[in-house]
Image 1 (cartoon, one colour):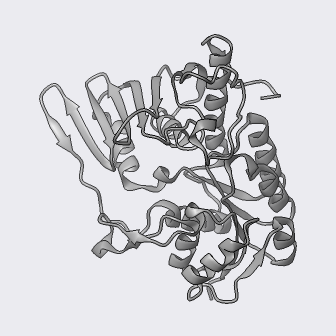
Image 2 (cartoon, rainbow, N blue to C red):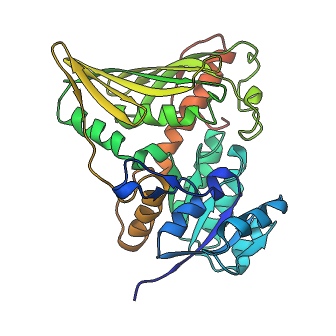
Length: 350
């Protein structure tokens, strides 16, 4: 008999509790959950038993949205009480960007064996280290929701790159535009994508933020709500394997956009709007995707359970997510110090 995993969710924002939308790339246009509660509703091996948020008005909204799927849902305003009382197997951490650390550390120390943490993993490198150490000490498996790592276009593109379709990778260019092109809030997806395709350790960076953020030598945002508290900017990443990456995030652009271009010796691959296109001197090729039943957060949850049960590697482990935070904090440090080179990894205190 298959085990049913008891799940708790901390933070009831849209990414935590939104309803699924149709997925035109899925089988028969079936709904593709883009939230944590949606993902758990999609997977029969999981049962959400408790949710937690400081805003109690969100409990009624969750009950109206998910009451049929998750009956008798327990509600808490204190995540510690929920962790202590609910005997959870899995915890989703969907709070503000700067409030993940204590929740993850408390959950790992309490013996919860599976954690899914929203991105960015944290807003300082020291916080990332605390979370990783707590999970390692308690044999807790933690995955970070850099959602594109479970979407087929990323894997089609990386397989083509690994198979030599554009020769040796030389450069990667990432672009994020629109009012919410904030480095920590949405830029984390862009930088994680660049690291995903570079397949190496970031070795040093430099950057220039948008005007008005000269004093930002460390994170000073509000957890991802107000774009004015989280700058856009342009940066450069030098990877240990020699790949060089250029990052551009700009809020002053309409329409919003997100894209990554990987340039090799013989061609390039564009990863844009869930499409993958390869170009060389003579041809343009658009890659087809296989049909998929699970993508995004549902695939993240299914993978987490598989690794909890049988071991193995995660697509988005905390160690990978820490790379993105290192780059982001390195960008802030570079700008504050006059756009200088900042070597990675950063020393303690960042």
